[in-house]
Amino acid sequence: MSRKKKIVENVVLTGIADRGKAVGRDAEGIVYFVPDAVPGDIVNILRLKKKRGVYQGSVTEFVEYSKDRIEPKCQHFGVCGGCKWQNLDYPKQLEHKTQTVHDAMRRIAKIDTSIISPIIGSSKIFEYRNKIEYSFSNKRWLTREEIDQGDAIKQSPAAGFHRAGAFEKVVDIEQCHLQENTTNRIRNFFKALCYKEQWDFYDAKARTGFIRSMFLRNSPEGKWMINVVFKHKNEGAYKVALDALIEEFPEISSLYYMINDKQNDSVFDLEAQHYHGEKYLEISLGHITYKIGPKSFFQTNSSQAKVLFDQIKNLANLKGTENVYDLYAGIGSIGFYLANQAKQIVGIEEIPEAIQDAKLNAAENGIENTIFYAGDVKNILTNEFAQKHGKPDLVITDPPRAGMHKDLVYMLLRLESPRIIYVSCNPATQARDLQLLNEKYVVEKMQPVDMFPHTHHIENIALLSLRHE
Ligand SMILES: C[S@@+](CC[C@H](N)C(=O)[O-])C[C@H]1O[C@@H](n2cnc3c(N)ncnc32)[C@H](O)[C@@H]1O
Image 1 (cartoon, rainbow, N blue to C red):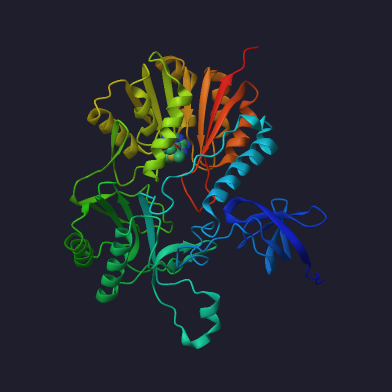
Image 2: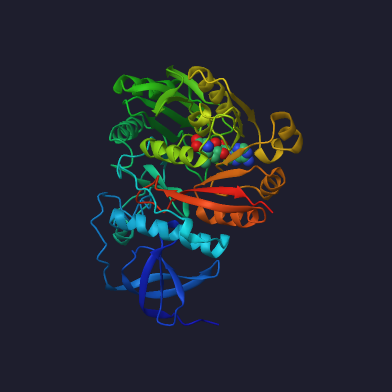
């Protein structure tokens, strides 16, 4: 049975949804998620299937363009998919992000949204990232125009970003504005070197090729840490590649490589081989200098990370007597920032190398009141653990996008810390967890912070206090 395609007219887009889609309603109030449009646009759409209960739409015609549209800076805008909101004025991006937090908290957490402060914008809206990963693929993502040219275009290798939904394909990037421009010089130099040496880029389907990816990290002082991921150790070639980078870029202060022969791209289970220079990259935030290893998580927008940590510090309002648990601690960044105002910081993080870095950072910064454990937080944080380290006065939890594991939420409910600060990079999963925590906690304050201009990502801090019954 063939279903007739339905065109819905005059859908007024009013907000942003997850993954860079705009959200709007038709005349009957039916909600649609629409890609490649911005709030304020009025569009005719082809109605597509529902995803998670909401109709998806594809624009067939722009009836009216939003007055909040601006010219995107990037030549790859619309193809790359990384900065979906670059064509929306930054103050408007912030307004919509604040609204997204309100919506998640009202609908999912069911809390009083008057406690949500407006989002704090990023002082830098370009070149704000201190870390980027580029992928190398023998399958370049082709645009619709290129495909329409037919035989004239040939499949060619690419160095850039994976295209969402087409995993083996990579959008070839000439210039990315998210990291300081040296990022482009290094990637483009390396790509040209690979062409010259005839080294194959990775083919994710056939699992062949030599060059897989490259991680670039930089400090505000202009030092760079590079980690090149090869598929296998081609003895002669990998050294030629790494030596050429060192020779061309004196700003590379630290160079690593990894061998990844697995199907997946994750590098957390791979050994980072130190090849040249310093083992760590240093980034200072306020009174703490962090030494960051090649596999450690560190907040990606350095200047905004200080803003985030200052907000956490203000909400924590420590007196110097408190026992603080820092869950999902990474290299202990948040704990160190607060350590001089607490009696003790107890950090838990699953990546062992990050814990090694945390211990090193404690020593380097002369911090003596921290203790760190490596492992899954839901397994480490038990009643016995709390007995051993003392009941917390404050728990700081900063999980990845998936939010906290349910078992951990239940453990926090049993632990009954008087206060919790929940730092999240996904308000939807945060709202889900807050709804569970609502059994014993009230959300006192909420402060969204924009760490990632032009993207759909939102960082949000919630301060919770234990209800006294
Ligand atoms: C959003 S980052 C926060 C890191 C740190 N709080 C900071 O601000 O730099 C989340 C961290 O949680 C860690 N992680 C993820 N799942 C975990 C788990 N089940 N148990 C412990 N740590 C985990 C990740 O390795 C990562 O370092």
